[in-house]
Length: 154
Image (cartoon, rainbow, N blue to C red; front, side):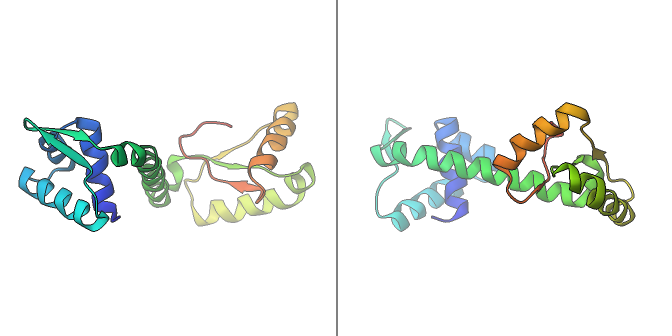
């Protein structure tokens, strides 16, 4: 399923109408209708029943919905991440590492990063919070370095 069709499917499921989906996607209603027909043709099954001018999701559409919503969330995360590449100062860089690396590697690495991106903001944890945070991150982040969009500490 093409990304264009996934976005249209999500918009129709969100707005419960093809006109609402078209408005949400900034396309014409006929273009949205044609794209939905193409998506259904490509898939080989109907996504929506048309009843009295309203679209009602089929069983298959209801089964697809959670996966499509995950793809849309991932797409929004990707858009935020790529936007942050253009503005590295907009989000703090959070580094998770062992205390040994925090004393030896991280200071040199942050110096190099600050030279590359003058406006880069670094977030630091201190004391017990750093140890607890490092333990939690180590379980979720085996690579040891993680950029967290949204400016929240995890």
